[in-house]
Every structure is written in structure tokens, then in C-alpha cells.
Amino acid sequence: MTPAPTVPLADALASGPLVLDGGLSNQLAAQGCDLSDALWSARLLADGPEQIERAHAAYVRAGARVLITASYQATFEGFAARGIGRAKAAELLRGSVRLARGAGEGEGGEGGGPPPPWVAASVGPYGAMLADGSEYRGRYGLSVAELERFHRPRIEVLAEAAPDVLALETVPDVDEAEALLRAVEGCGVPVWLSYSVAGERTRAGQPLREAFALAAGDDRVIAVGVNCCDPDDAHRAVQLAAEVTRKPVVVYPNSGERWDARERAWRGSATFGPGRVAAWLEAGARLIGGCCRVGPEGIARLARALES
Image 1 (cartoon, rainbow, N blue to C red):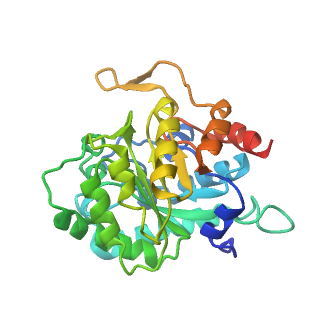
Image 2: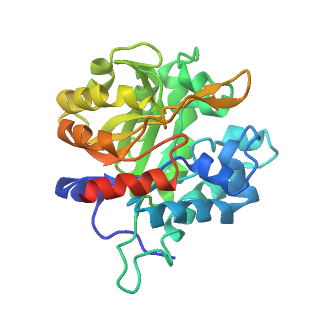
């Protein structure tokens, strides 16, 4: 297995921007995987781990320097509903980190190739486990304490696998962000905090200044920003994240196409592209990639734009 990078991710960010990967689910679908299960891409941790490693490797070849694991929708509760016990679920969560580490083998890190990529263990929101779209609304009717109790067990297991960072991602509201930051207390792994947004508000409707301020004085948070949003909303969010927190900013929006739930099809044209990168960099972005519908080709174009 490819070794972990020797330079901490936070130190690397001080030296310049890094390319994140793109959407794992769309790459798995391109490889012919069925993602119709409620576990989504996390199903393949049990049923097709080689497909996950293959998808990660595609992004390494495209130029990604940071890989996000397939644990976004992986929870003890979600696995239990599929008949997977707690011990096996913990093994699958830890395995998500190993798969991302292994993707660098043969793609770099050996024989004079590029150094191994950093690994970000994905911690998705509570709504991702529900698999009903509520991750884009937030406000689940649970208290901060209840959300903390939900998130802590899998965070502890993921931390045991020694990722370089925990990606607290696609967070729809400030309450869940607070719960996540409580849940990572004592885990020993740095984190980034990334909201899903609409305009200058979280998906739950809170002002982004308020949302970002939650991480401003937290030394565990090495980057803050947005993901799984429209590319048109990314620039202002990057500006606000940098102004409020004075931290490096992480940004990885969707392609810009829109999902038609009734027809179960993507509509419109992609608006994600390397032409946006210069403005994001100027505003404070240091971790830049793509989310839904942004594949290896899009990441390769992004990597070339950053190199130039």
C-alpha cells in the first residue's frame, strides 16, 4: 500500500493550492456500478471495494492530490438496516481509508512518481443516512446533542484508520456543524468543515457568515468552505469563508447541472470549469475540486489550470 504523505496537509496548504478529486458516485456509475441502493456508493465498501479503489485511482491519474473516501453515506445505522453488524461496519469504515491510500499505488508515490495523495475521510450529514434528500434541507428535528451522539461513533472509527483529515462535508446547517465539531473532540485528526449552500445561506437558511464563524477560532479546523453547491454560488462563499475565518478555504462544487427528481435525470449544461479557478484562488481557496457530476476529465482540466 502507498504510504501516507510525510507532510501534514495543513503545512502543505501553506505552500500553495491543492487539487481535490471529483464526484466519486459519478465515476463509479461510469465504471458500470449500480448505486440505486439506499447506501449509495457506501454499498461498494462491502460489495465492490475494488471498484472504489479503481475510481480513486482515476482521480489520482487526473491530478488529484487529495482523495475523499467512500464513507459519506456509511453509517452504523445504514449498514444495520442492510443486515451488516457493528463490527463489520467498523471494518468497512476503516477500509474506506485503506482503499483511498491504496489507490496511489502504481499511480504515484513510488519509483520517482508524484508523492502519495492525502486522504480525507468523509463524514457526511445525518440526512445522508436517511437517503431522502434531507441532507439538502437540514433541520431534522434533532438536538445538537442527539446529532453529536449519532456522528461520534463513526468519527472515532474513521480516526482509528489514520486519515490525513476528516472531511465534515455537505453540512446543511449550523446546528449539525456544531454537533460535528463536538463529535471530533479528542479524535486526534484535523478536520475541514464544508457546507452545502444556496446563495449566501446554508441549505437550512442561516447566513454563511454565521455558519463560518463557528470554525473561526477552532485550531482543529484546517480549512472551511463549501461543496455540493452550484458553481455560481462558490465564489462569494469562498470570499466569506476567508473573511470570517482567516483560514484556507476548501471549495468543490457540483457540475452546475440540475437533478430532475421526477424524471430521475440531469438537466441543463455543466457550468463548472477551470475558468473559475483564478477568482477562487484570489478569494482564498486552497483546496479546489469538484463534487457531483465532476469527473476525472474535469479534475484534469482543473489541475492544468492550477499548474499554469
